[in-house]
Length: 114
Length: 115
Image 1 (cartoon, rainbow over the protein chains, first blue to last red):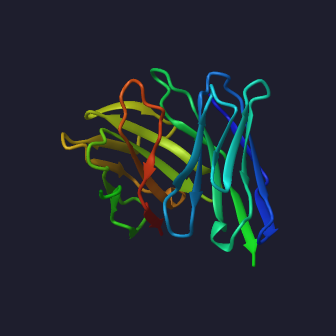
Image 2: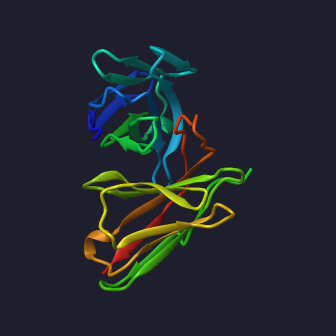
């Protein structure tokens, strides 16, 4: 089955700096890659996603890049703010019959120091 | 538009007991998935229901079961609870259909503690 590895497990940055979280996946059939943000005591919230036919996607201060050949994708947060502090999860999804579950990475705890 | 609602939010059980958790998806969503979140294992897929049928199942023992009702609400049940079942159980809903990208919307979770 699919295996998603996520690095780093913890990341501390100064407010205003950029943060980058990287994930690799094993199943070349995966074609949808969402990123979730989970704040303390809450469920994961989708913040951005990318499909396998796209190499990069941006939404204000966050962007995601995908390299299908290398099977890795990354989350980039620019101009970080204290409210960005949370646990971030990457995931991979195989969109075909019989395999309809997200496989999550192990999470990255991002701490933005004011 | 209301989000995904899970009840109860917190519960404490003892080993050997059973528990039932409930999930109401976003209105109009027909797919409900369940995930277990623990510090050691992360987010792991339990099962997915669509139109009252289990469509996919993760690698969990038969003690974990679920069902979906005609209004898309779902329940999951864990029987003969073990200490290791202590976790945050997350429900996620999606519109779904054969062309679904898999975009999931999660609830706040039900935190189960087994003593």
